[in-house]
Image (cartoon, rainbow, N blue to C red):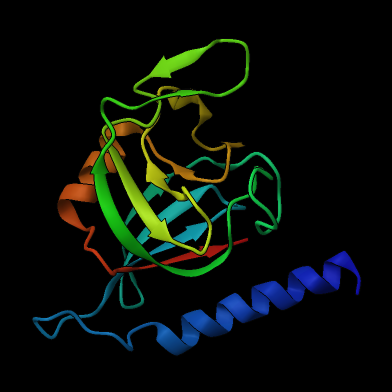
Length: 166
C-alpha cells in the first residue's frame, strides 16, 4: 500500500468519525457537544460546539509526521480520544535531550491527559512559545501557557472528545 493511499485512508477514517459523531453527543443542558478538533498539518486546535467553531488556538505537534507507531517515536497519535485527567503541571520539569538539561516549567501550568492507548500523551503548555506552529514535541499537543489555561478554565471536562487529524 502506498504512503499516499494509506494517508488518504487515515484521513477518510477520521473524517467519517467526525461526520458520524459531530453533534451526536449533547451537553447535559441539551446544547451541542463541546469537543476539540486538532489539525496537525495546520498546527491548529479548534474548540467546537457541534459543528460550530468557538475558538482557535495555535499548537505544536510531534517532531515526526504521521500517526504514532511506537513509544518514543516523536509522533502525535491520530484518531478520536477523550480527556482522562487534568493535572497541575506548574512544578513539573523535563530534560528534552537537547543538551540544555532539565527545564523547569516545561509543560506550563496544566497537563490535560488524553486516553489514547499511549502513555503520557496530553495537551499542555510550554517553556518555549516560539515552538507553537511547528513540529516540535515528543508526541503531545503543545499550547501557549495562556491558551492552555483558558482552555482548561472555559472548556475542558473529563470525558470530552478530542479528535486529532493528520
